[in-house]
Image 1 (cartoon, rainbow, N blue to C red):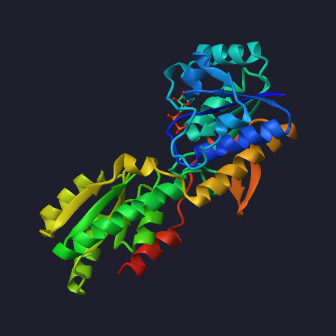
Image 2 (image 1 turned 90 degrees about the horizontal axis):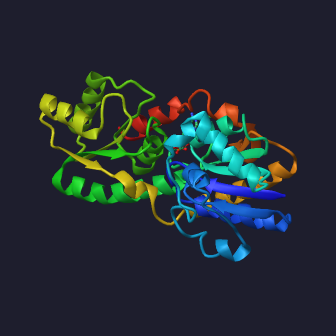
Length: 321
Ligand code: ADP
């Protein structure tokens, strides 16, 4: 079989572990495997090369994606996708594996309407925001980086008796914020999945001060509907006069060496994708359900939203009180 793989959308640590195991499993199955650089854009530009075992050596520990990734405007149009299908057909590629987020999965599903080879997705995004899977590759590393950064911020927060509003990534999802807040023992967490009630939030902060808290950490998801950390901090400062500072962690969360967890599950998902193809599956992705990797329909991943566990939100507040 001739099989191709690409990474698309935002990069995530652990994508290299996925590619490595996908390629090596393909070779083990005696498939010919092709790497497409720079996502769907690279496919349209015919940036396609055959990969051998040595090509994916020494990448398991590297962040980012050695294939490169991109966003591609042309792929939103039917003509763009038709061109992509033609290129795959011309090369005799019988299956395409896409590692990326929900946008990349939407593109893959749309492509599968025209392209008649098999398609399989692997969830790779730091946001952990894909419905139908408990985990997306990169999340553990990103949370680890945010926790590492906040542990340092806490030292200065304590020395000066300040409250830090720390903004973390996650697009429209609060998953990174929630896990980070719980890991850091933050006072509070503001996420888009829950409407921020400013009165209640401020009361909780002031209550903490009254009870003798000398410093504080509030983790704010970048997509929080009340605004980013700067906007919320400004409002709270004006209304309370509390000594608040803001730190926006930004792209630091997307890079760095993947954690062991991302390498393990990245490797397992890369391998599972090849097995799904062998079993003639298509329009599926490697989902984690109940701690196992199982096939789930791409349609499930692109419909609806991933919810947060309200008990976990409550736990942040109870344990950070
Ligand atoms: P992510 O995969 O990280 O969510 P994006 O949402 O930017 O990232 O999607 C990556 C790429 O997938 C886009 O640049 C585009 O080429 C393709 N894509 C996303 N959504 C669609 C769609 N609805 N139809 C076709 N292609 C899409």
